Length: 358
Length: 175
Image 1 (cartoon, one colour):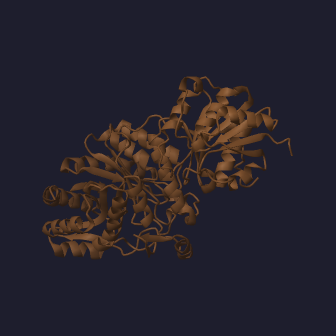
Image 2: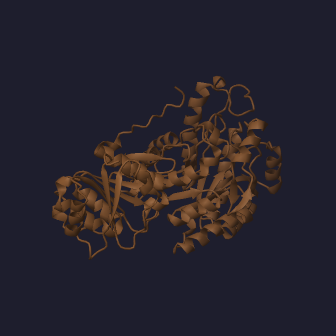
Image 3: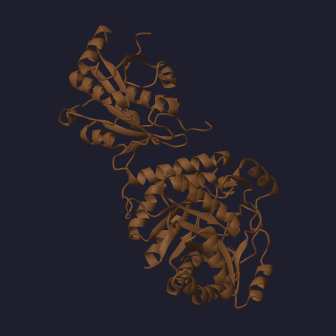
């Protein structure tokens, strides 16, 4: 089992923040921001020392919960400061990006990091459509087309034009090309039938997140079946499961930590906006409709003492088929960084060595 | 009506009847479809047919099955072919002569076409004025799968040749 640490860039605000999204940027504190990125590097040095395989970064906008609107910039900073960790860029939000730019930046990162890069391409959560004025109803189609254009830009050897539905370019010819050939290990992230089928058609990995094992297994089963229809079988490492984990010395302590967490996501959309977005944004798990996640806290599927968590990881491997765990060990946006360090240490010393060979 | 530039479509064996894309292109071009199934049709016979139509210069469009024949026509009367469009070409011959062609050429592939674009890349490498374009979500018969996308890029290329890389549609939202 490979283990990835989901780095969410901890911004510790000097004063209380309002609760709605977007968060007014006038309240931003530049010292706290600069410190968040330096502290990230210190934390990741420890993550590297503990023996994690990957660090993952993600794209989020307009709030301090996860302070990485540009995961490319975060990844470049990390690549320059750390020498062993593979950087998992999970991932650029494809539908509201310029796919050619995404291809260029990822190729540049892959080269700067000499191949210490894996990439997840995704549609983004429903609220992300609002950050760059994207029509939520178009986000699925733009994601599929954008991902296909990124793959084409990485691999095509001649200058080419792209006559798309949502994107049009008359000439594309990226420099640098990716360090890893034909391109970095790439995953289509998401549980939807569309993401699984895209991944299968293009021989990409699949990444599912947060849901209970049995529910995520529906998506990974669908993915493997789709791969079989395309005459190939993914490796275990081509399935990522991102999840929340609370590990403590005892099961009781872990559950007490969970009870102490808020049951709503911080910086929620206004109800009228949330409801309107939800009516426009169709989501599914392997073809079965599900509601988009826009407000509730995400489930925690690994919880307990190190012994308990090791058994849960074994079950996740068996049920989901995942070969990479991308773990959030402490809620993004929570202010208690010492708790994060304790969780990292406990996981790194008592769990990681025991799941490495699963 | 005759002031529209001529677009001669060489229709290869087994290729579809005129499509919605032809209808769109016919708003800007005088579209003439010539049967070009091999071996009955050769570049010689096609040039004679075009002569009989009284066309001095013309644009040339061909799908996979007729793309080699279309290159043959362009090699035979290069000064009369204003521009050449090859849809999903799968074969090329006479590479040395093709490399000397200065004809503005557009090579299109659909992203769902199972054929690799190797021949298109080869043509683009050989010819000094050749452009490769992928049409998203189209199979080998792009004009059927994405008629508007096909007609737009083909029409733009035939009108502006290599300057088609310069965007001319406005992006102003609110003036």
